[in-house]
Image: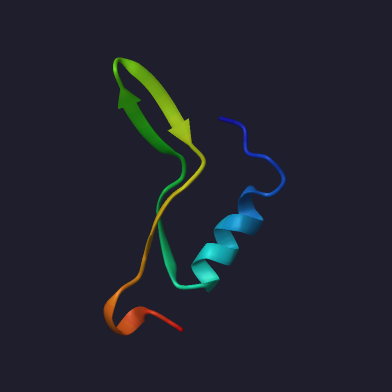
Length: 51
């Protein structure tokens, strides 16, 4: 999947805000259809979160 010009900016912003990018891209299969989503991310919890 080609990444648009905002991909790296969004990824960096998520990481700077305390998110952990888990997949780049996130590949999923639903009803026999393969799909890719730009990023999979989850918030960092516990002592690592910055707020």
